[in-house]
Image (cartoon, rainbow, N blue to C red; front, side, top):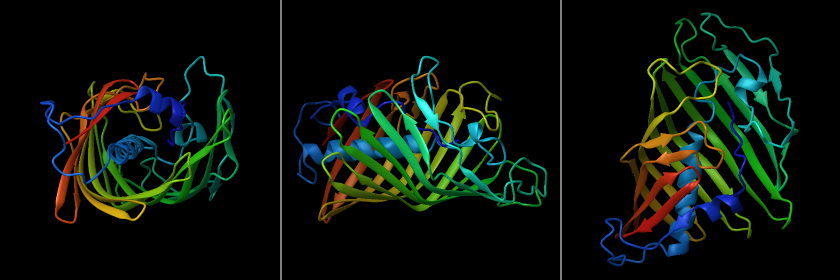
Length: 296
C-alpha cells in the first residue's frame, strides 16, 4: 500500500520541535561543526520521511485492488479528493504458488492526484511487484521502485516539494512480524526553496505488531514497533556525508495518527561522518507529528 501523508511539509515542520543541544541532554555544545543546525534539521526530516516510507506497502501483495495497494491514508473526516487509478500490467497477473503474491505485476501511477484543502499531492512512476519465491507459498514480496515521485504543491504559497524513489525493497514475514531489506535504495529530495539532496541507504528494518497475529495482507498496518539499522550516504549541496543509522528505542508506529510522521515514540540516531569528523544527530519522537532533532 503506497501511503500518502495527509499533512504538508509545512505542517510537519511546524509540528517538529527542532532543538539544538547535546544528544545526551547535558547541555554541552556540538564538538565539531560537521553539520549546521539547519543541515541537521534537514537530515532529521529526510531520515524521518525514509523511516516512515518503510511502512509503505509493508502488508500489500500487489494482487488485490488499488485500495489495498496504493490508497492514501485518510481520516474519516478528511475532505480530500482522490483521483487515482494506476494501470496494472498484466491486468490479471498469474500466481503460480497461490500465496496471494503475483509472479509479476507493474503498477503505473501516472495521473494519480490527491487534493487537500491546503495542498495537492500527486504520484507518478512505477512499482514492479514480484514473488521472489514463485514455487513456494510464503509471504515474500519484492518491490522495484522506478522514478516513483511524490510531489506536493501548496495552495497558499504555490511552492512545491518532491521525493523521488528508486531501488528494490524485499519484504518477508508473517501475521506478527515483517522484515524489510534494501540495498543502495535512493531517495532524491527537492525542498520548497528549490534545494536538493539525495539519500542512498542500505537498511534492514524489522516490524513487530503490538498485538500478535494482527498483520493482515492488503490491509493497513496495525500498531507496532519498527527497528531500523544500516548505513547510508546523504548529499546536500557540495557536501557528502556517511551515516550509520540505528533506532533505540524502536520507533512506535501508531496507525491512528492523523499527523505525519506516524510515530509517537522512539528515537533514530545517525552517526554522521565527513572526512575525519563525526557528529551524532538524534531524532526523538514524542507524539504523532512531533519530534525533536538534536546534535552532538
